[in-house]
Image (cartoon, rainbow, N blue to C red; front, side, top):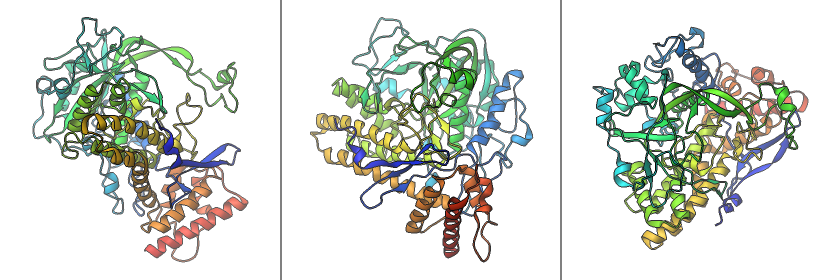
Length: 613
């Protein structure tokens, strides 16, 4: 199938040894004329102080970690007696010292205006909903929202015809979805909800405070107009096909069209079993639900295309899940000791623990994935694949791609994924798992599971402890995206032959190879210049390559480094800069040749900044 041939165009540099002897891969995407170019490990953790990133050289975001820390305290204390604070998130008291200054009154995740030199284009999201919606003129009640639902997926795609119970696991053939029923019962309680996301939907934020909201979005009640469904899709892991998966613990409850004409789908995660649960329980735990709620809202306000989060509802259920041992010492005593793995830091979850349950409501233009199309291709069910592709064009690319232009659809999918990966790396985000069932056709972050935010620079870092080959590590994300593009391209080629007599083959091949590479580089290079505040393209490349060389040999906090670099007082009126000016960015102060290399780079950077004025 040729799924891995893209590696000839995208690769990483050889491993280098870091300061502590650990292997450090300095990543680069390679194309014909630009080789060895470092990938941007981008703004990751702006500051624990909550202060604004300096505007002198184009830094444009708050600390994701700082936002998470602040919002996490809001969420986990909500059970003690929730009330609305100024953030717009329903939760309990937040220590004032943790709230970033100038945060907007409507949402904890609001940001101040962009610095003058921050690129507007770099923050224009592919995802239409990723631009903050202005408040509707009038809000709808929950009943009105439910009655207004217009479920295009149910109308345009094929329902499974069966007499079997909705929760019975089975292969679903010749259909796109199954009608299902939430299974949650018992006591429910509001953990947290986003009033900003409610406004995006046109839902009155006051509804978030009602018992009915908790019941509906906790999976305990289905209102008139709602018709829960789960879709079937497949999965490949780095081009290795796994077969049928599907919405195993997620079910959509409806689509709405807001006042701006945006079609948004509401989906409950953890509300019960479906035919695609593969004999699992269909539930979600509170811990992971809170993480996804906070991170998805934070990513949105950091300018990264993502699903949104409306609410997290706690349940009285106790869920059994594998997790990590309580202490690092216990991990080191495990019998399973693969070579070159420090078990005190890394080991897949394996200890069964009892955790509180939760149901999360997430929102997106659609939840359609690469694997939705791939499943029907693998089954040689081209008519149902065509029907799904037609629906994808209407849902995600209306006005951009013409009906039946599957090559054009694929080109847009490729562009969006390449841009998304570059945006992830801008903020230091690592998705963790980039299988095709975790890759959205709409080009936004979906399924925030084993994700993480890089702190100390390490090109090989991954939060996904099951990924011991590090296929989805920070620097390998562009490569993983390329593999997904290549496999999907084979599926779209087959569809093009079936529906269009193969007229789009050359476009599809180009998009899945050079197209992806070029799209990624175009975005990535702009981000690198923006992070340095450099406008000259060639100078920016040279400075970035030198910076990667220095950072690969040092222990550096990514965000503190760029914040320090943005300090207006860093560059004197005359003379050079010593490495000591950047001392707070280093976890270990560079000495000897390393210090000399840093000083040389800093002065080269200062010279370019002065040149550009």
